Amino acid sequence: MSDSAPSPNKPAPAEPGVAWSDPRRESAFHDWLRQVAPAHGLRPETVRPASADASFRRYLRVDGADASFIVMDAPPEKEDCAPFVKVAGLMAGAGLLVPRVLAWDQPLGFMLLDDLGTQTMIEVVDPQQMRATQALYLRAVDALLAWQLASKPGVLPPYDEPLLSRELALFPDWYLQRHRGLELAPKMRETLDSQFRLIVQRNLAAASVYVHRDFMPRNLMMPRDPAEPRLGVLDFQDAVYGPVTYDIACLMRDAFLSWDEEFVLDITVRYWEKALKAGLPVDADFGDFYRGVEWMGLQRHLKVAGIFARLTLRDGKPKYLADAPRFLAYIRATTHRYRELTPLARLIDEVEGSDAVSGFAFGRL
Image 1 (cartoon, one colour):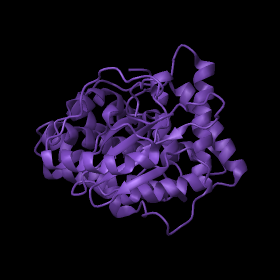
Image 2 (spheres, rainbow, N blue to C red):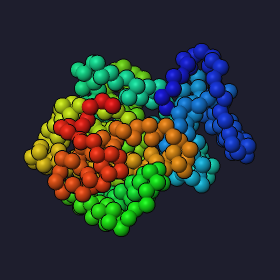
Image 3 (cartoon, rainbow, N blue to C red):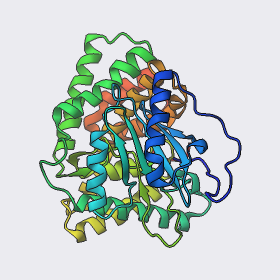
Image 4 (cartoon, helix red, strand yellow):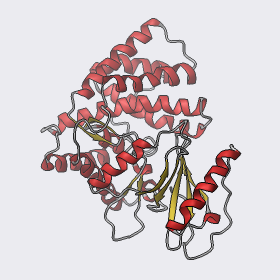
């Protein structure tokens, strides 16, 4: 949802058309859009691409009389939209700025949503303007705190040992074996299994809250109204109930944007102070909390390495692996920092080369 849109009061300029691989789905879409258009003042002739993501969903933009709207195109045989609708309701109830579901054809997988804006947070972040960047990240922290404070057990799927383990398995299955072409010898498999058990154990030691699971600047929107203090929140359909360390690790150890350790610490400690004051279940000692964030970030980036390899090899989306050096730097920095992770650090060094990882390897890549 990050492409620029024309003013809704002016004719839309010529833009690339919407491509459809299935003529039947194209016909069904236009029939559905004509049906919902009158209630929302839509102009079907203005439909154009908005954005796509790493899933099988894509987003289209369509103009109305006074505003633009977003259409989610999610083939039901590949994407279940019910979690999106459920989490959107939870987030709205928590006071977050999220798109309203204005119309939904569940059998067809078409959904009409509010258009929160045309710029994601990552598009406006300027590393040369650190005071403004800090303020922007603190707005993200406020959204995260509001989400976590609404947490209740038994509402969202648990981020439990089986799910964490399945995610970690993506690293050997897709990154090491299929992307790197390695045959995992028994000793290497044993190392991975034992280290993964340790990582899962450490991460499950954290208290549980609502977890967005992809809380990063690419999924946060700059609001259309300059007076609106809240950032918009998107891509939340995979939300779960799990470690309180996850989303702040996700925000500050972004798969697409890296920061020096000084900035990471600054925002993380400010989050921790606010979370502690608000009564969220974070460690009373920041050092303990930060170690938990690092271990959670390690789990995430091992998973991300596998997912990005899968996106390239299975789904034909090679752009994601271009960011491999960034999340591998996170992995190597963390494994070299903790003695318990030495076997994993040696394994990664063997695979990627044995260049030493020194200090805090979070510089901009």
